[in-house]
Length: 199
Ligand code: SF4
Image (tube, rainbow, N blue to C red; front, side, top):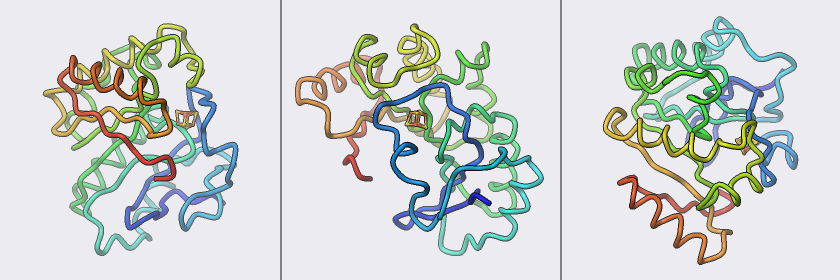
């Protein structure tokens, strides 16, 4: 059975779904079965809320302050289980909650999910991946051609409603694209995090 909770580089992660609305060319799911101490992050069937909470209650969170929703899928595709389990983790284990997301949750659910996240989530890290729609669509291969604007709208809606909001890119992008991503993030008033590719 796939791990729901796993650790990697002194951080604990929640892998609550394998659903995703992108097909990123660089996605690690096509290269490795698991990450960190997880043998596999592929669920035979996405876990129910009961299964997530049972796994949470058997996990030893000693020494961890933050739970990051990030696994082999897009966490907001399992929105109800994300919200309910995050609220439980906060209340029961005193963990702060970060969601690593592709930022397409509003488009996917056809509604503004930010007010739902705002009550439960302390931080969001949104994968920007590219500085414009054309390059974004080429690398992220999202479920809708207008996804890039939806991502930017989601990030803007999070700003001011969720305590920590960051856009992220990886440092394998060409320098001119990194510069353009930085300018875009600056224009939105959102911090840009440039991650090392392997992290
Ligand atoms: S959004 Fe994340 S999980 Fe989905 S394809 Fe892209 S990298 Fe993979």
